[in-house]
Picture 1: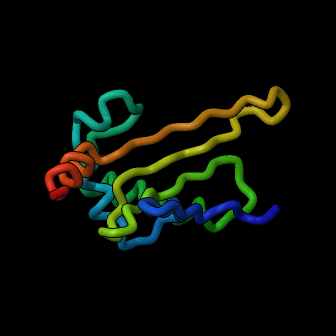
Picture 2: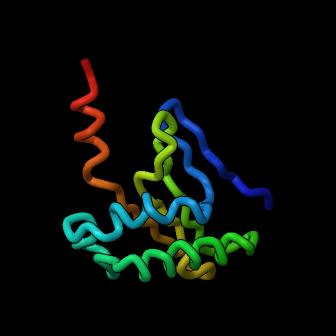
Length: 114
């Protein structure tokens, strides 16, 4: 099975994480309002480092039952969120997904419009 990503749209790039994404990830992972419904966070810098390191380690395996992708805003070249797709149980075909986005990105984009 070949990887089905990266996925590119006119505004976004869904791709694997890189080590340089850590500051962008920490911006939303440390925001209590963003992570209030997750089972993690708000993160300390060390926790964000561990999470990004985990993504990098996860990416060494293919195929895999869980795929976490960085959501990059193409014009800014900034990671604005994460999506996760997981196969929970192959036998019962049970899967789930999750997402987290920086809550300040949309408001910045709205302010920039003429």
